[in-house]
Amino acid sequence: MTVPYKLIVFDFDGTLADSFDFFIEATNALAARYRFRPIAEGEVESLRGLHARAMMRHLGLPGWKLPLVARAFRRLMAERHDIVLFDGVAKALRELHAHGVQLALVTSNSYTNVCRTLGPRNMALLDYCQCETSLFGKRARLRRVLRQSGVAPREAMCIGDELRDGEAARDVGMAFGAVAWGYTRLSSLAGQADAVFTDPADLAGQLTGVAYS
Image 1 (cartoon, one colour):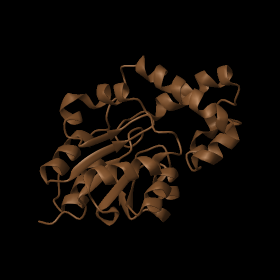
Image 2: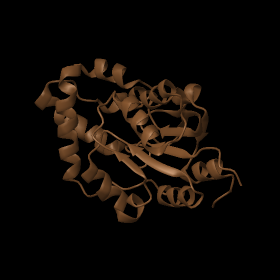
Image 3: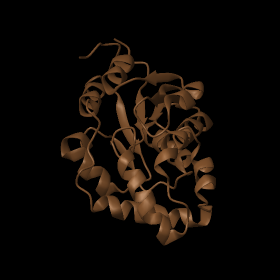
């Protein structure tokens, strides 16, 4: 059976890790310290349709503060032990690995947080892991993974849950797979996606051609 892609590059938060509630909590905890607007409860769903740049404008968060906020976010997450993988993610990773697909991770989160959430068995399935990527620096990291793997861009897919993931994939010539369970609403992502995944089992099934339950 031919698997359509030789390399799959995953985002972490909102794609593998169920961290959206923590994201809202941490954003609001950091808002006073770094002097930007907190996220009001009633606007969460509308913000889930925005690009990251538009969300920053809405919150009044200037770009020069972003590295500071990102580091603080990673430190807050390091103190938490309740961030888990979405149901079915571990099995999907195993199935893809068993079919000979190279697996990679590109994330703005820290290596420590990634390791703790994924656990040793799942980390061992990853061929490449790029952490602490700047919020809008995913293109360079995707290119690095492509060079390391020796896979042509047309034979690779980036899977994520944000509009910036799709933009980065397109800019380096990779396909983009949008997940329905992440930070950004699927209705906002679908227009730029080459594939849409409704749950992790669907992810493994589409990419291997085998139905999993």
